[in-house]
Length: 292
Ligand code: TXA
Ligand code: MG
Image (cartoon, rainbow, N blue to C red; front, side):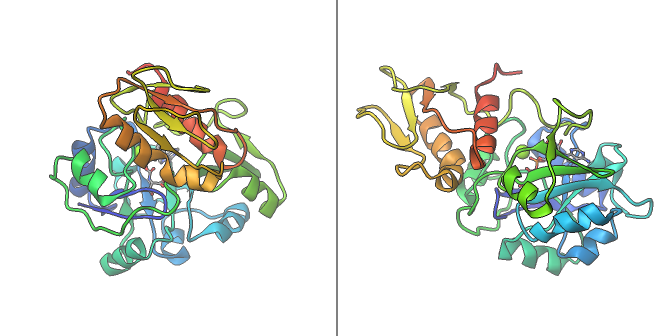
């Protein structure tokens, strides 16, 4: 088991065929066993050994390598441990773009199961240092610098001739819709399929979060977006120029920083719900939700 960088967030990886190794991931994260893992492949050939890839899945694969996970029917002879799928008959696969991740998978020569490299329910890690701190130095980390996207992959299930977004992520839904010329449905509202790990409270810092805060109140830490009021307390700005790509990249790192201050509440400025804003707001709402 080792942590490695991807273009989205750091992952905590192990041989997806080795149940003992995979169990170590669940133990390290205190992750509930009902929550399946994403399997990372070096290339399309490796992915096709694991899952059925109908035409629509192949079209989606134009975004690989990249920040997209596709949920597909798992093949009977995939060799993937049942613990990875949590007993589901589908598997989430992705081909990451980060050179270190690709080198690692190619070197091991096997698909790697890897959830985000953070204790279950906590903030994801976008630097090697955050991984080390999250696991009190108990997990070996390949340091590949800060993650480019800063948000987890978008998860799409292929359901016959329908695409269902199970998790908003670093690949905006609009881009998929534009490239494939069809609508992507939203899980929960329009479809019965869901990702078992999409819990109401997740990505949670120790501090509480107050969303859509136009200005901070005394003693709060402030996570601004765009032009911000002057404030003496701890402040970070996701993007001074209101750039959503920059904001996504900064989100977890800045939450880690503000969480390390004495503030009990982090006030977060309003963020538009378009493009990457959909995933940013998804993470913020879960981070702000009452804790389990
Ligand atoms: O960007 C990412 O996706 C990162 C990097 C490391 O690749 N990984 C990541 O993994 O975010 P994790 O475990 O934190 O989130 C995986 C999500 C969970 O919500 C899980 O329930 C869902 O994917 N998932 C995994 N397999 C699934 C399946 N077969 N069907 C539905 N949801 C699935
Ligand atoms: Mg995670």
